[in-house]
Image (cartoon, rainbow, N blue to C red; front, side):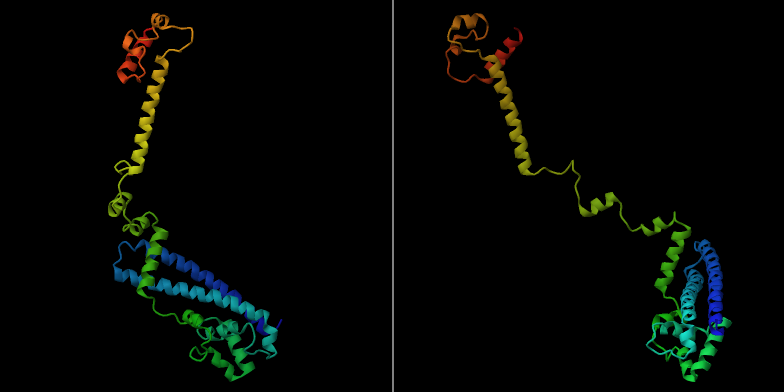
Length: 271
């Protein structure tokens, strides 16, 4: 194992320790700021939240550098043979390390930077200049983060409230959402009880009622009329109370009225 590879592995371990330390500090800082958000003024809350955002960006930068350093440690043989060129698949990792080494207080990274500059020459040092090496804009935004915008600060504040005060978050997040009754009023919706039935449904209900009445009348007439046998005369049927006593109805071919059918039904009940 060469000296360059040893320094790269030590740099990866140092970055991991530094990242874990920053994560613990950021967690404590977020908790302290979240507990004071209810009493802070908007300007003070913004001033307290901006450092938290910058710290999160720094942690993300350390995570990226840790991966890049481990990749370079596995490709150390190529670097030492001066076989590196722009067509290498790990060139972005080398650019990241060369640009971040002068900005971070990690001596192992500084050693890797100085070693590669001496090995490849002074032209290789231009990779550490963000104005000249513009191959990865997203990385340089992590290395030189801009001032957080107001929208980002407000979103971070809401996230803190949601994390540390979950009972207060729904009230703030859903304050503009109307209730179900208000939504019905806004949409002019009628309840199912007050809603008028369509005309076709009314006609169907009326037709069903008429059919039920006609069916009841037919049943009454069947129960009231006698069974006509050839050997049965009118006198025997009248004596057995199957026919009415009114002689005008005995030989009538007309259909009985509703009152007549009702009278027959009453007589049948008394049998």
